[in-house]
Image (tube, rainbow, N blue to C red):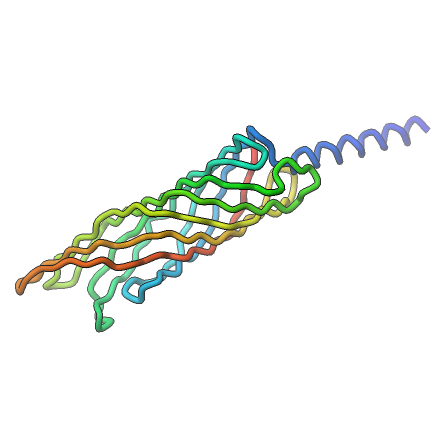
Length: 199
């Protein structure tokens, strides 16, 4: 009888601990590694895949901040006639305020979230084909995301998300025959999946 009671107590403690681990609560921090694909709106810049690393902090059961940085990814860019103009590297940085509607609920194994914030996109390593000399300015814009965390074990979750960024590329170019400038709308829709570990 004592053995049965002891086993029941251990099982109950394990269940409660597991539920506590699942609950999103104020003071939680997390890190996330993911793999994502950006679908660029314009056909003048190639779509590419990249790794993305982010971390966050919940200052309320249902609210938190997240900072993420993408891998510096090489893109091809093209002219109006789809001719190859060169390559560049794009690196996004996102600062978001996330809302977790099921935050604080211990039984919730699935945690959806929505977020909104600011994006900074850095362009570098710009190489243009002759006779072009091209420069692209860094850009700030609005970013929004929707996603879901699916609890796997204790503090480890599988995460899927979609993110939209209001991003332009302000381009200046020079050739021996003259110069000019213009704006290319990228507005990437990014879909990603990865793992999140919560402390």
